[in-house]
Length: 484
Image: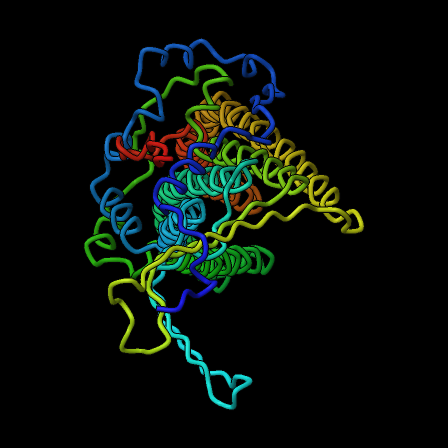
């Protein structure tokens, strides 16, 4: 067979590839990563003594939501939301997307081997045609990663993959707290509707009595009009609360990803905020948030990814070495392919040295460094936001208990005041206006009591959330790093 220049270099492919691969990873341009210092105080704001007693309890991040929430109806709703919520589903799909991107980055470090068969017919000087047919295995433009560019891109993809895993956990924590708070809001709505309905019925009875007294001449028109205004005020409040309840149910349905089950509606009619109990959780130190809050870990992984990208940008200053090689058969006749004597190797290395690109490479490094600095600021902001959220929740827990006790005492005192005002009015000692003022004050105090109870319970849920509670998958809580 006539020797084709295509097969002039005859070198064993495997030994060459192994020798070149041994040089990979020897040079890395990635800056050494150092975790930034937490820009917050070493302690949360001073806590009350009764809060410190919770130190013996299990930490929020270690307390499964099934153990934290004891209401069976609420547990079922949380389970439904975890199965059906679309935002959480997107978080899971983001992990799959990041995993695929990581696999691509890994694959870029290895040669791609393709099976190739080609043929050509070209005119020659003698008036005939020359035919060349070839077939075999081809490795085209395999970049040999002497300066760590591909390794840096792989480490960036790996950090982004881990960041999406942390985002998934943060999404679940937020979803669990959202469902719990929405359920508590619906329970409060039911109590307020019941209170408004009873108040309206009482005021309508009072209006009937006042109208009868007016017809008999024992009550003035002013008394009648004041009674009417009180009824219409209660009716307007009832309509407002009906609307609020419908909106709160719509919000819960959205996070559930489906309609409210019938058994949940039945449980809702019997639920009372005063019967809801949530365990105390220890707070710990701000430094513990770094390992217990998925959103902080997500921000750190994003920072690690940005740091790795600097290495890829720096490597662009250095030569790029690529290799095209193949093994196969070549013949002037298609029938001669793969016959004895037609086999050969090709080896075509290429060295590309950057000389002038108008500062594009330096700009790429500066862009990567600026992105890393942005990621540092975002990481620090995540820590500061977490510190503020915990501090706010602690402030609420420290004060809402006292506020609830004061509100309960206020309702009791106002109820007694209303009884005395009614008695004085019936005996002609006080005016009807005094009775109306007492009734308005009682209704307002009763509404505020329900709202204060709701705020106290929702604050406890929020504290559980901001301390990292709500994620229970022990395996995924510390995801192993993908293999290099």
